[in-house]
Amino acid sequence: RRTIMTITGVDYDAASGLLKDADGHVKTATVMHLAQVDAVEARRRLERASGFVRPAIAGDAYTPID
Image (cartoon, rainbow, N blue to C red):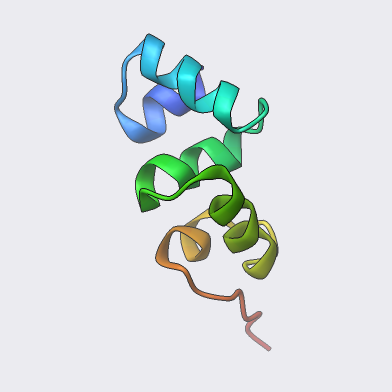
């Protein structure tokens, strides 16, 4: 909860709700809140972004730099 609260600025109750909706997954909860998407979309974005939160929030795929 503390991580969600720090990253997103939400209160304890909101962080708890996000984590519940994200099945306890912090990255999913973070993307859900910051990108304003549901858990299914947040997971899809994280998968596409190779687990990186910043591109997942933006809806981008992760492309490693050579």
